[in-house]
Image (cartoon, rainbow, N blue to C red; front, side, top):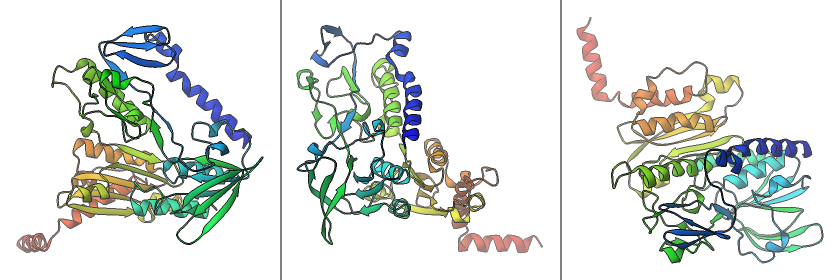
Length: 400
């Protein structure tokens, strides 16, 4: 465990140079360290400095949220920001939260030697993802030996010198669990406090963050926001694309011309469990909420030759297409390498490439990406209706 964590910190330190103050200073950016707050809609105070601006961007991120559970703060729970600093593997670990971070870290610590219990308040893990795909991940966690309690609720925590007692309620029974450490993964809270947002007319909510429009502009036309402080997608790549959008809209757009809309982004994400679970575009629940008529196509990996030869047959590729057209609205992949495969479907959505065209694209054999081509074949077979079959038979008879 110590060697794994040491390697992780070494690699992370190497990557951090891309975001270092020295690199940005070398690019010509003036960097000021300190607590920043708006003085008025033209000036920002940073400690003893007062900076003048024509445009400003709020990119203060988010922090792990602490649920209102008696005794939890006294237990000093780990978070995704602090867990990588520990040097000894906890013998017993309770993970609160069954979203992406909770599932990823629960599986990692179980495989590194902890006895992990995962507690989630919802009916199923990864409740924003495809239910069938989330079930594949849950089964993998259980096979690894993780005790999954879902739905379950922690009512209080009692801490002693070297352990904690966690009181849990489930629909079947109540229990008291002993643990050496608690890992908190129940969501993130936008950092909006102390910025004097009300002074400059920027609307914000403690839970949802800074309010922005479709162009990432706040309720003050001089001030924009991007990243975890305003987006419902709290991913690094979401913050990156939003930052690029802010630069374009704040500095290079002329009135309504040249602006990029947030609604034009087809967001993809991946949960890095084993197997991985990745998604892009519209989810099935979103399609139902918006009354979008859809067709669903699913290709299991146990019918893909490369997956069979690699003994990695768990999971599937699933595409949601506009009914009768093959136009891709969303896609989910659960399985080995799902995070890499999902980009092909993201490109297809962004480029308006339907299942019919994907099915005609050559995919090297044998690869896991052949599952995507097979979905194109599935769509093509739906076009062979009774009427087209009769026409085809008629043409064949004429050609004798």
